[in-house]
Amino acid sequence: MSGIILETKGLTKHYGGVHALEDADFILRRGEHVAIMGDNGAGKSTFVRQITGVEQRTRGTVIFDGQEVNFAGPLDAREAGIETVFQTLALADDLNVPDNLFLGREATKWNFLGPFRILDYKAMRESTMAGLVKTGVKIPNIRNSIANMSGGQRQCVAIARTATFASKLTIMDEPTAALGVQETAQVENIVRTLKEQGESLILVSHNMRQVFDLVDRIIVFRRGRMVADLDVKETDGQDVVAYITGAKTGAQFEGAA
Image (cartoon, rainbow, N blue to C red; front, side, top):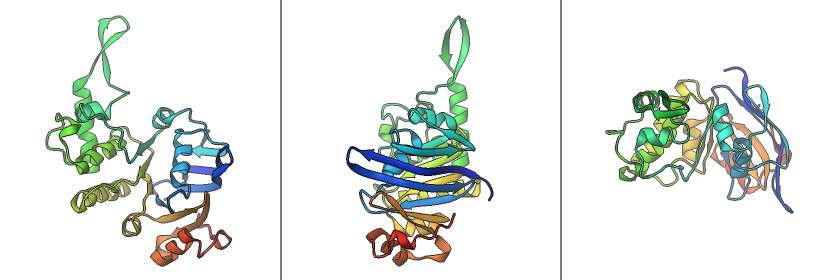
């Protein structure tokens, strides 16, 4: 594992007088899986929103794939190669799997009508199947509407978008928070598949068992600041909880990067 896919320097977000994120220095290497942990309001989601362009940062620098970036919005981040699976999934219930995967970036072809094009459904179906195979996602019928799928299947469809468009970085925000045991296991297997394929990933999670099973490092946020960067092989759940609760403080922060 070599090279850096994502780096932030002094990443900061203020909402008026509220300092939601302060001076976050972060490094993610290519092929690495890193968890972001912390209590509610610790700055985890704020951090992700600054990286993906959902919000504009107060100050700081984001370097992605070797280039300093200033994404105007999530579509810019997606075009650059960052795919985000939010808790809300952002899926259209009335559309089928290919239509959801290609929503906003539909494949088209010329039909000799000047600037007008028609959708290339065959290409979208083939790319969808390739993405499902790559991530190990099993959907019996990709032409079924999302509304007729289980929560686990819906989550897997959202994750499959990352493989369909050859993303350079996948960010998952609490991907199994609302899922049952079997569906959670399915999503975790997909994460392992991404790891085997050398995909970089950031996982926002409260699930300690999940984090220790799936990632290489754990970043802990507390009150808007990064307070720990821990190698999972050199720490345990008690240590992580101590940073989350403040029993251990930022003064003891040892950067693993």
